[in-house]
Length: 335
Ligand code: AMP
Ligand code: MG
Image (cartoon, rainbow, N blue to C red):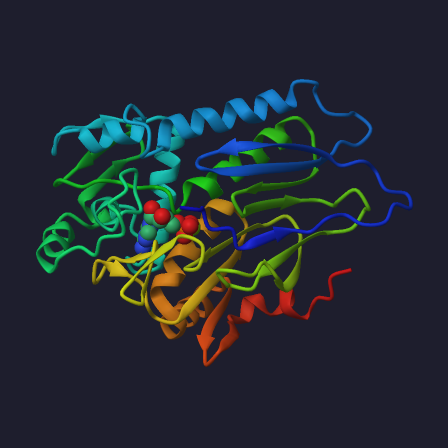
């Protein structure tokens, strides 16, 4: 199955007084990353490529559900009621997850692990099987981030009942933020980090212009740009139902699962794009807004001043709906 990629990084065209953009890329977390850096007069450290790759490897080693010995899988095996000491990264991701869980009223819920596995979107391929009502009911009993107590001061967490955490809906965005922190710490100010379509932008591109990205038309068989967005020092993420799914008896089952029903979402929202200060927030919220659907999603985004763009299937095409905070991105003419 392919990782969702709702965003296209647009190629830099023209030359003029352009500065070179260095590009560092590779595979990570079941997808790919691409980091573009405009080095400036001080240049980049010669081992930047290696430093980025090592950072991503360590985040994947800690938070993958695909690696049996990851810190996350050890937490998943930890007995109920026994404190588990967490690394700084896992603690931050769990706290950010809790914020997104609360903001989306439980629509973003990383304790969906058993349901993700049951529907075959986890490490084990289930052969596109639709689970039975009994299996769904049983899995739903162990869902709820409220069952995870986080003790920030002690850097430890405790499961109040059996839960299985799956952070796939937030870790790529968090990893983009961590690469951004690394670049900031090296004095680099102009860069675009893309981790599987979750982005973090800073400063300007090699042409001295604001970074631009394209939001894709949410289609299984086309890769076309629906919108061009200009990004200033923000994180952006798109979640969609069209790149990671299976079909059975004519029904489309997407990898985004509604924690209320235990089933893949089917509310007509084909993609949700969120722009927030960090990529981790954008990543978690875009997944949550896919679940909330058009009306609740736009209501919450407007109440909280979050920039949200939804592409909703209507008739044979898609209709755009956006929150008030997204308006500046729609009116802006990208160059
Ligand atoms: P994303 O591509 O960021 O939307 O993340 C989707 C992944 O997050 C899925 O493949 C699942 O592993 C997991 N997931 C699915 N539904 C949810 C949900 N409602 N809340 C949190 N994570 C989810
Ligand atoms: Mg996400």
